[in-house]
Structures are given as C-alpha cells and as structure tokens.
Length: 621
Image 1 (cartoon, rainbow, N blue to C red):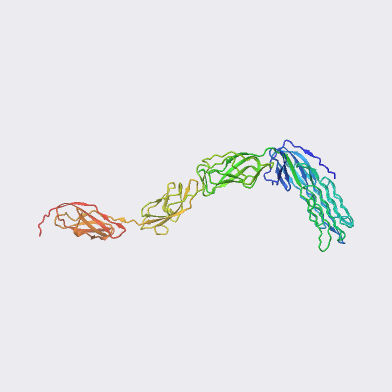
Image 2 (cartoon, rainbow, N blue to C red; image 1 turned 180 degrees about the vertical axis):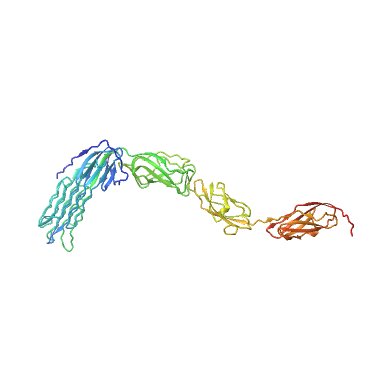
C-alpha cells in the first residue's frame, strides 16, 4: 500500500501583544515527552477551550485531525436480504508550525466523531477541529469525516457507499459496504462480493503518517465497510472490512461476522455488517466515528521552580492567630502551575500540623492554608523549614507538563505570627456570698492571662468589673431591702474571659448572695439625775435605739440592783434607768452595756461618765 505524506506549512507571526482571557475554559491536556527536551501536549476533547503557550516557548509544531464520520447501518430489501453499511471517512489532517509568545492563549475546538447510523439509516458526519491563536490572527482547522452511507449502490444491490471527505472518497460494491476515505491518505476500496458466500466490506482508507510524536503513526484512517451475510444459512457470512490505520478522527469501521460496533477495527467505528433478517437475528447499526485530536510539540528544557514563599495572612493587631482563624502561606512559582491532590507544608512550632494546598491552581501563586485548632499554642512564632513542601501523593505540573523543582527557602519564626487556639477557662466559683453593704465581690481567676467582659445577666446593672484585673464589684446592697430580679438577695451577672489571642471562654453566670449583717446598736453615755452622794439613791439613765436589757457598772463592777434593766419607750428612742445608791465617796466611773432583744443587732457599750460621790450632808433618819 502506498503511503502519502502531508506537506508541512509554516505560519510565522511577530510583534505580538496578547491579553490572556482569565475567564476562558481551560482544555484538558495530556502531556508527554517526545525525546530529550521536546515535549508534547494532546487535547482530545473540548469546544472553545484554551491552552496557554508554555513558559519559554517561542515555536510550536502542531497536528490537527477532524472528527471521523459514523458508519452507515445495514439495510434490508423486501425479500429479507441485508446489505452492509458503508464505513465512515476519517477526519481531515492538517499539520504546520507556529511562532508564539509564552503565556498567550490558543483557543481549541476538537471535532467530534459522527454517530453511527441506526439500522437502515446513514451515519453522522464528524465535525471539524480548529485552533485560533490571538483572536482572529491565525485560525487553522482540519475538516470532518463524511458519514457512511446506507444508500444502495444501485436498485438491485444493498451495499452502502463509504464516507468521503473533500480529499478522498469512500468505495462501494454491490452487496458489501464500501470502506471510508482516509483523512488525506487514500480512498476507501469497494467491498468484495463473492456471490453466494458472504462478501467482505471494503477496507478503510489508510490514515496520514506523521512523526510529530516521535515514532511514525497514522492519523485519520477511514472506517471499514460492513460485510453482508451469506445467501444460505449453511454458507459463510461475510466479514466487515478492516478499518484504516489511524488514531484520532478515524471513520467508523466495519463490523465482523457478529457485528459489534468497531470491535475488530483500528478505526473506532464504522459501517454495520449485513445480517440475516430472521426471527432470531437483528439488523445492525453502524459504529460511531472517533473524535479528532490536537497535538502540539515544543521544546522546554527547564521546569518551573519556586521563586518565593511567605506567610501572607495577618494575625491582626495582637499578632496572634486565635481558634478558628486561618494561617496562609503563599508559594510563588516561576510560571503557571497546575495542582492535583493536596500537597502539604509542615508548620514548625505546632504539634503535627500542616498547611494544606488551598487554591491557585492555574496560576503562579499557590496558597496553603491551616485553620487553628483548640490545642494549638505557640507564643514565640511559627516557622517553615526549608524544602519541607511535600506533594503528599499530589502533583504539580508546569505549563509544559514538567514537574516543577520544589526546593524553597525557610520562613523564620516571627512575633508577628503567634498562635493561641487554647480557650481560657474561669476557675472562680460561680456561687459567691458577701455580707450586706459590702462592695467588692471577688477577684476573678482564669487559666491564663486574660481580660474580662460582662456579657449581661438579670442584675447586671448593679455590677462593675475591672477588665484588666478581674475585680468584680457590686453597689452596696441592704439585706433588709433586696433589689435583685428574684427578690431573694441573689444577684446574677454573666462574665467571660478573653485571652491574649482573643479566644473567649465559655460565659459563666455568677450568683452573688447577700447575707445579713447584724448592726451595732446605739447607746448613749450615762446621765445622772442629781449630784451623787454617799448613801443616797440617784437615777442613772441611758438612751438606746433598740429594745433590750441594760447592765449598769460603777468603777467596772456591776451595780447589784441593775443587772438587767429593761428598756422602755419606742425605737429608736428608748431609755433604761438604774437607781444607784453609792456606798462610798470619791471618784466614780459609770458605764452601761446593752444586750439587744433582736439578733439582728449587736450589743453595745456606752461611753463612761466620770463623777464624784459627795459625803452625805443630811442626818440619817
């Protein structure tokens, strides 16, 4: 078989200015190495997707293959005989070179294969493959493969015509399907009719030979035509024609004796074989044509590398990442890279913590992130060890499909990037008791240095809190006049602690119980009704503000007849009187002690009264 080689056309562009379209849909690309520093990029699907020219690349070789045509379905005539469908044509092939600018976008549409024809219908046409560089400046394409026909070659015979493109036509014959034309390599042969025996479908035209991927291979072969069955059940049925050699854009190939679409052919689809039209046999559909392909090759000697690494998040005014906040490290590359999986960067200063890849694939700046957890604590500054980035079963791929060099510098510990994910706890008991008229309640204590904040509470209006020291105070409360919400002398306030990393404790409600304080009774100094004289009764009187019993003393000794004198009158103006009969002359010091009747009051001792007991001036009677 003679192989035709496609001439190569060179397209040169200069003085190019480009603006990449960041919103465009990126193509799915398979990269490979042709040899040495020559790389390949293959795109087998996409409509209007974009591929960016790799960094450092100024020239591309490319090959385009259109979508192959689908094979025609088998056809029957009135007497029940079936004829084979024609094979679909291979997509057209176009190859050239292109001067490019690194980073510029090439818009790509890959032709799709035509659908295989259902029984008694034609296959579908393939669609064209094209690339557009710098808008409308350069647009090239490869045509589609034509459909395999179900139409009869003439009225008496049922063979399908092989599909054609605008370079090569498919073949035909009287019973068996003709082979599809190749993309540019040749026409499809006719089917072979051997009379009463089943005939063989025409082979697909051979595809275009190209060494763009190193070893010579064929692209855009035509599909083989479908074979017809034998006239009698005891004769050998025909085989489908062999598909033309080729990858990408191959036309629908013929089927074998038991026609499974494309199973025995290099072309991925083709014309259906004819088959007996009996109660147990079905007519066969043609097979679909193959999708087209775009192949680029280029020279790229140097893989991308890491150009920078830095902590790019801010810890805020307190320079501390608190619980639930995120630490970001940005790794800069020398060119755009694509990421799969979840690469990691270990954090030095936190126990078994890693920054995980977060975003940036398709750019030159990758962000790694870590969210602070409850046990994380580092008050001297986190750091990153040099060359510690690990792929963790993921991948980095640069614009040429190479694995970047991932060595990088260290990040030193800094006081601007502290970590405190530990939430403070309040250790002060929630139940507190103080006596009435007190103001200082308690000095609050937390598990670490913290500031304090009142959140609310039923009786919050009565409280004040020193935020830095934790001293909790309450306005003076009277046990006998409760003002709390429950009216039971229990005042409630809700408080939380906030540590240096802005982590807030769980709020705690403090219940402050006001207890009663026994008040000191008031007692006046003793007064004498007259000048004291030896042997003559004289009344000693005191004033008090609460009811009780009063004991009177002279020179520190109890006055025998005044050991328990009841008060008289109405509080707070009560008195107690002792009839004192001095037994000696000279200086005398008087005082009294009150024992209140109510336990809400404490006893009181009066001031002293210094007096002089005179001699008796009258004669005893």
